Image (tube, rainbow, N blue to C red; front, side, top):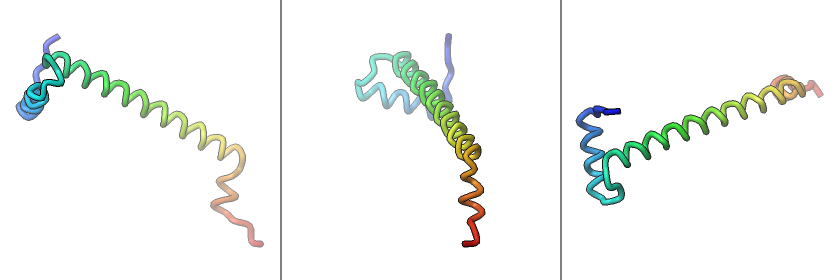
Length: 72
């Protein structure tokens, strides 16, 4: 697979390569794509967790208790 990057990203990749942390642009791009995919997956897991929490709060009737307080 060949990937073309816009000039600004190409310059950033070249700067990263100059630090010596990566041997090749392929290595850097591979790590960047893995990071992106992992972060997206983590975001999906967090969203699913928040939905489950919201559903549990709703099923327990806690929304009403918080949003509509008793007149006591």
